[in-house]
Image 1 (cartoon, rainbow, N blue to C red):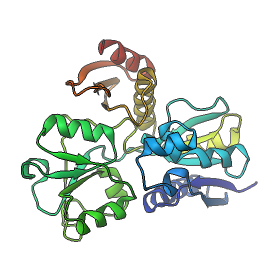
Image 2 (image 1 turned 90 degrees about the horizontal axis):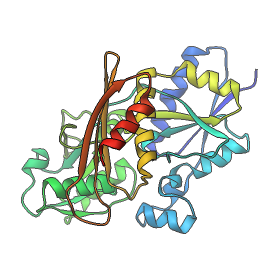
Image 3 (image 1 turned 180 degrees about the vertical axis):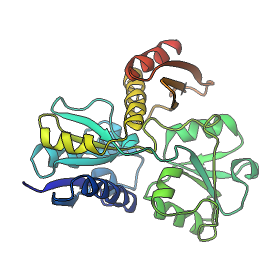
Length: 307
């Protein structure tokens, strides 16, 4: 049997997620050779400007800057499964690709990382918070209008080092999932920094946040079977629902959208928060509950309730 080749970006977080995927595959298929191929994406190379500008210069939609080269490798048969952070994956894929599985979701909270303890509420008036996410930027300004919010690029260790080195930044925002997967303990100081998670009922996460997903060539039955064998179905259900909500909104990286969903029994509960990207108006919000076996229908109901 031919080796199963998984493709991943080369950041520390992406490699950690690829290692988790490899471990799951090896546990499920102990006699199968699993090979990892590291691929540098446009988003990894271009950290000097905001993602929206990178996307425009490369001729792709915003989130595509993190998967373009992985999809080329998939298409050329160089890899069999592309491992993604699902919050970075466009909601509409080319017809010959498919998202077919996901690992168990990590914590979805956003985290305030600062040199002083106390989190968001303890930041002095007029503090500067750095984040590249428009969703985080808009929610921060909505909750704390006094804050100055600036853009920042780079991987997790790079951003944390910028916080230590630059006097003009008081805090940064990161995903708890990334910190946990990189081995950080949020209950302790991280090299002199303090990380405080934000309540997801107040600060909505991104669609797909904390989910590691698998993209394949749609007609590759072998890769599909392997990906499905290690899939955590509740996480895949949440992934489907949240991505469908984004698709209905036609939302990209430049659209400030937060969505919180969870499964309770046989019910899928979803809460959505959407900001107007062209104004500073308060967000539109909605919540729904529906059968968890039809996640796309629940997402459609949430979308319709926003009107």
